[in-house]
Image (cartoon, rainbow, N blue to C red; front, side, top):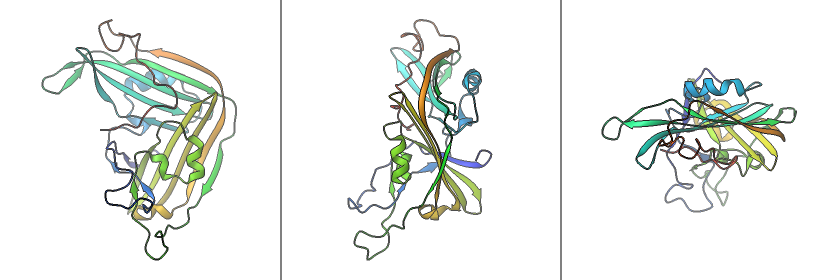
Length: 266
């Protein structure tokens, strides 16, 4: 689906159920989309993308870039980036930082290069499974009225039918993109993964092209890899900053445990 204009996953947290909506009567799940500088793999910092490229193998199945954040450690500031990439051969988790200096007010500028780690989980050979799922039209709780309004959710995984949601449950919240084809036609794409207990699951699902307001009734298509992890290796890249910098005060950027990283937020 690359090459199309897209709307990235909104980083603004939304309530699981809109205010005032009675519990148990919320409609299908929806996430809020906006034009953001994160989400699609193309948003990964070019320096980081070039550093991890030699460690990627196979045709990309899914990939997600979390929102870059500015953090403070002591008197120092740094920029932090996390992302993941997958094919049928591997899942790669990426974490990188670069030091910042104040540019006045609440503004900062880089004072060094990106440095970080790419943790490569090599997968046992497995075919890519393809399935489709259709949802029954939703109705009101008593069946006498129109379907309730959609509920806005934090985790894009909740967009999917239950059989697909179960596949990566326990992993990081999913990411999603809304691809705009023009003339009111869109495709909604959800990407998720889980690496846990020596096994890996990678899921990419989409519905559309369809009318923007008709997504709830569209058929979901999916591609899935579910297999064992043969080997896990960490590959460092970039030059570590001085010992006083946040990027190296504890030996370098820390990669959160597989399957536990959160969704980017404003």
